[in-house]
Image 1 (cartoon, rainbow, N blue to C red):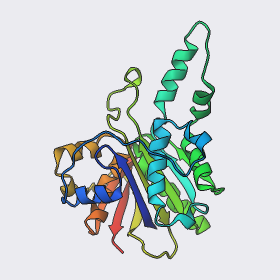
Image 2 (tube, helix red, strand yellow):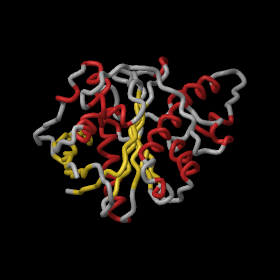
Image 3 (cartoon, helix red, strand yellow):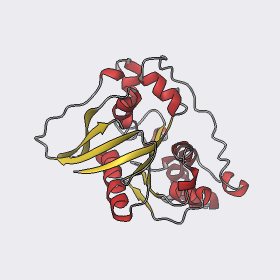
Image 4 (cartoon, rainbow, N blue to C red):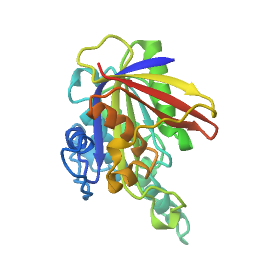
Length: 269
């Protein structure tokens, strides 16, 4: 078992513009009403970098900025782990279309943004952080793999680690069965050491396929909110956030691989 404490939370989705709004919806204080995403200003970045941002990077950076807002002094110290199932498929589609032309011409900006760790690079510029950064894609185990990576890094370094999980719907020509239909990003500022004002402690336990799959779902009774929670690998964090929003201890099980899971015990500090 490993444990890690949550120091900050950031959420970005249609109808869930930030953590306070998400907390109110998960508590049942406000109805969930899907809405278009507002454009993120990315004020931490210099103007030249802001002009190059893609929608996927904007989504990730908005969540990361909110999660670290209460502890801006940790931005330059915290290592980061970015997880996304497919990265920025909008860029992939444009590059493939360009390469299929008789005279292929790829935009330098698209080429610059085509790598899977583009979001982490922009975050390093925005936060002025030189700590290590990891970018993962772990299929069905995206969120669980990110949590485990953060917990292990924080235990080894005793420094905070920022987890950012984000997904965007793919372009229609690249859509696959079960592809996300809604954008979603969540960021958690995590620390294994003693830290003031922690929101909750997560106890992480890898489990075998035979482990009992108990998942908190009562706070996702709204069909639209439940559909969002099941839409993509990043929004799978919503049951965990529901426990924190309701100030309740509880346990969820996240998929870790095709035949194993990660038990996450939420303990409110």
